Structure formats: structure tokens, C-alpha cells
Length: 398
Image (tube, rainbow, N blue to C red; front, top):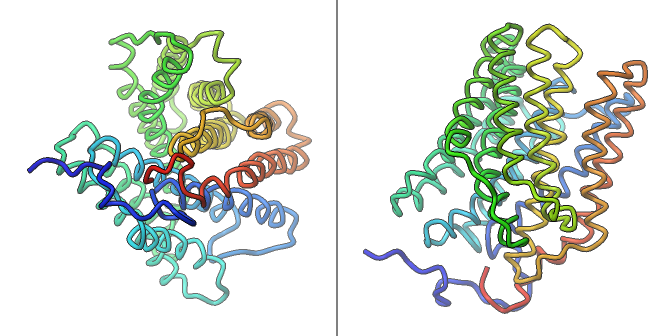
């Protein structure tokens, strides 16, 4: 049976009025931008001692919501949109997409409802990722695109990581919350490495008429080096073996990035934000090597190079570009969004550098980094909310 064309107008909702659930990127990117802003504001209040939120400890709650709330929303929006392009098979839109989005939202709200039993919070929150994995697996398997099969598998790995956090929060295990958060961060990094390898060089070449260099050996080493380093740090965070694997991963990713590089990209904000975001991933591996070799101060900086830098910058850049392209707009961001890109990188820089070199200014640095993060995603929400809620400007579905 031939694959159903995604361009069949009979298979799409109307293009008139509002279109918040016309395609997966719309509700999830909008929610991710707003949630990144809200969660950082709440976290700064928690740091000041002005607020207590959720059934988890403050640090665990902060890490959990940034990963399973914010980052997972971006991943969901991107994969639901990309899978339709990859397979030619419609992914959920309209009421089914709204139901999937509400499942994600229920997990977020459950933490904020006072008195809700922790077990119920866990069940609600754990439901989203398996459903998303199945939703993506169906078109991928129907189209027999085994090259995309790792994405549902990685979503199930995120489910395991989430379960480790909740089991610790329920008191059924001891110390698994930290393991779960680190596992989640590294799974998200792996997803970003796969996505980045596909889209960053192609976006760069298409826009600048260049030709990125891809070395077969490096492309083969990327998944091997990445997974080896991340598994090693989970098993033996302080060992010379882990330091070696992490150093190799850093070298592989920096080399890969160098092959994509052209000086022309600095004239295109939608490109340099992606290249800088990937550079934060490579830098995270370099710091991970230092941490594993015994430089304790590098441990937190490595984690936040991955999260605040790599995840923060790449998700912001991808949301900005995908939202323009899939709403029929020119790939030219507002100057305001260029400032958002600057702010997200400053937030990451402060979060990584201050603990390493200015530990006495830790509290002030965390506040400043948080404000920079809020500025970045606040600007995104201000500019992109009407874009994500309104139909495509070219009248096409999606």
C-alpha cells in the first residue's frame, strides 16, 4: 500500500483562524518557550528561599523539569514534525495532538498541585514519554525507516531515567534520582547529537551554498565515542578510562564541527546559534574529561555545558528556525531573536565559568545566568507566540 501523502488537502484541518494543533511543533514549541521562562523564574525564587514546589527536593525538581518538562517538549515538537517529513505519513494533529499535549501538560501541573499524592504525580508524569514513543514508532515502522528507529528507543530510555527519579522521590530506592537525571541529560545530548548531525550541515549548505566536509571515520566515531563516554561516566564518573573516552568524544565532536564551519555563517543568526550550540556539546565532553581526571569543580560545569549550553542553545535555535520554515515564512529571524541567541549563550557561559573560576560569586552568577535564560526564552515567547498560534502564511496545511 503506498504511503499516504502529507499534501492531501483532505487529510488536513482548515487553514483559517487559529491553528495551535495543526502540527506537532506548534503546541510543544510554544509550551517549551513559556515553560523555560516560568521554571527558571520559579527556580530563582526557590534559590532565594521564597518558594517550595513539588514533592521532589528542590535540586531534583529543577533538573527534572528542565529535562522532562522543557527539553522533552522541544524534542516532542521536533520529532512529531520531522517524522511526518521523513515518512510521508501524517503524525497527530487536531484533537489527537491536543490530547498528547495535554498528557505532557498534566505531568507538569501535577507537580504544582498541593497535596497531590506523590505516587499519582509519578504515574501522570511517566505516561507521556511511552505514548510519544509509540506515536512516533508507528509511522517510522510503517515506512520501514530503520535509520529513525533509535528515536523511539531513546524516548523509552528517557522513561527509564524518569522512573529512577520518581522511585527515589517515593522512597522506594535510594540515590537513583541523581542517576536518573544524569541519564536523562545524556540521552537528550545523544538525541541532539543525532539531530544536529543531520540538520546543522544541511541547513548551513542550503543557506550559504557551501559544502560541509563530512569524514567517514569521524561520522562513524561520533556515536561510538559519544555513547562510550556517556556510559563510562554513568558507571565510573571518576576514572582515567572515563577521562580518556570523554577526551576522545570531545576531539571527535570538535573535528566534526570544524568540518561544517564556514566564516559565512556569522552573518546568519539561525546558523551560528546551531553551531555554537553544538560547540557547547563538544566543550561539555572536554570538561567531562577534566572532571573524570580528578578536577572536581569541572563536574557541574560539564553538566551545564551540556544542558544550559548545548540543550539550551540548540533547542532555541531549532525552535526559531523550524517555526519559521513550517509556517511558510522566510528564514530570517527578527533582530530581537538574535538578542535571544546572545542571551542564551551568555547564560551558559556564566553558568559554566563562574563555578570553575569564581566560586565565591556562585550565588550572584546563578542569578545572572537565570535572568539571561529568562530573557532569551521570554523574547522567543513574545515573538513566536502569534507565529505558532496562527495558520501558515502561505495557506498550506501544517
